[in-house]
Structures are given as structure tokens and as C-alpha cells.
Length: 268
Figure: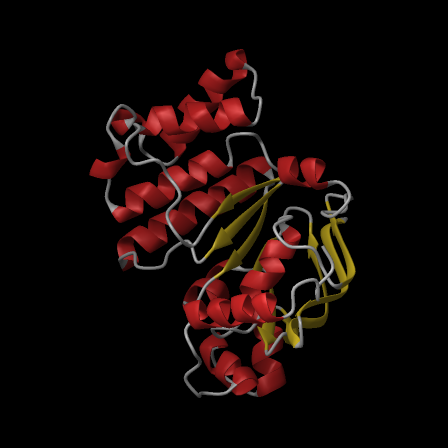
């Protein structure tokens, strides 16, 4: 099976602060890939480069055989994304949110209606399609965001901590939807999570990043063998340490301050 994501020697510097350092990994088409790391490890910066939101300082990326820097429009049409923070319009209904997304991506009207019906049925929201999103639970919003991310038939879906704050039952249901989409449509899944049991159960391959560097790659069993541990959580702690890290928001603030101090320091 060919690789749908290829990352070679990827580096991102913000002035004198290097957030991602010489990172290389690949994701097989149709695979389920977990990208794990502590807060501030470089996960979000890497995902932003993969999804065209940041330009690398050096190195190369291929997404569905396109370069996110020079072929950004083609790359954006190749993926859907569910952000860590909510991004739905809560003053619209579920149906209106999906219709708006379809229009933005140029999905033909004759296909859009059928696709919306299929996805709302899949995530068990069809009967609530005319309800305002502000009246949805957290789990329902996540399911709608996944449906929205898949509306334009992307080949890859990026899920940035999609189950954060959800109860165990909702988390299990959400992963069931994702695995069904992967099996039925062959969509490649790239996700981050701090719930190690999710990664151990769902991911076929895993990469662990820490301090901007990939410290381990392989299956869950590979990582456990490498560290001599019994669970993925134990392997993760052996690879990254047990010290509490600064929150991701503080890391972002630090990067912003570096950007302000060193304007023009990173390639744009």
C-alpha cells in the first residue's frame, strides 16, 4: 500500500526557538495513525504544517502526492479536519452547518443532499438535523464535526484530540464511527490524543514526538517491546518522562512572543 503522507526532515523554527526538529515519518493510505506527545512537544505545529496553516522552515511534506506549500488548494481538498476547539456555527442547525461547508467546498448540489443524509445517519444525528447546534451535547457536536469534515469525500481526516472532555461511552461511540468510516470508505485517519488506551486500541501505527523530535515509531506492540513495558501508557511515560509539562496554550504564547521578537525569522 502506498503512503498518503510523507514527511522528510521537517523543521519549524520561530526565531531562535525550534518547535519541530528534523522530523520524518510516513502514513500508509487507508491507515489509522496516532501522533502522540506531551503538551508543547510539537504536535500542533506539525499538524499545522501538514494542513497548510504553517510553512516549514526546512524539510518536505507530501500529502496525497502534493506539496502543502506549493499545492495548498489541492492538499486542502485532500483532507478533512476536526479541530481540538469547537468550530461549528451554533446559531445554525446541523443541516445548515453541513450545507454551508458543502457550498464552500463546491460539492455539487445533487450530490450534497445525498452525502449529508448519509453522514447524518452514520453519526446518528439525522433525526436532530433541524435542531440548532447550540442545543447539542458535547458528544453530538463532535459527531457533527466529523460528519462535516468528511462531507467533501477527503482521503485523509485529521482528528486533533477529538474525544477531549467526552464521557467514556461517547468516546467509544465516536471511535466506532471513525473505524467504520476507515473500513467502509478507506479514509486515512491521523489523530492525536492524550488517552493512551484509545491509541493502543485504535491506531495501527504510532509516532511519539517529544521536544520537537520523534523519539519512537511503530505499532503499539513495537513501542512496548522497545521500552520493556506492559501498556502503551507505560511506554509513553518511559519515552517522554513523567514530569508535568506546561499547558499547550502557554506553548502557543511562547511561540507568538518569539514571532513578535523575530519577525521574518521563519520562512513564509
